[in-house]
Image (cartoon, rainbow, N blue to C red):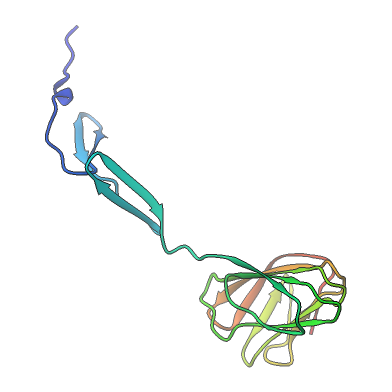
Length: 164
């Protein structure tokens, strides 16, 4: 039985090329294509694949009474008195904010004009008079920005949160 191994014949390729299957035909030399938040760097005998542009996430130990929230940050509410967190004026769609209760004082999330937080079938009052608050020391919330700068959704929560 004869086999066709013509694709095994070495060919000159450029940096980063691989042999890629081609149904019904011999494999072709081609490079990998980068996707969203992925980079591909081709070198002589190497290919480097890395994540790019992905939002970083930072945790903050918050022990003061008033904290301006920053998108893609988490906060440990670590104070014996109430901590008032204020939603950021600027947040891109798909930004995340997390708050984990720890200190006995609890936490509340204050809003600015035009901002609102949706929590299942309920929501806070739109604007500066609305808020979302913990009722117990260890309550937690994970928020996702669904409309840039203004609208947040509770993705998950632990405890019995109260809303105004």
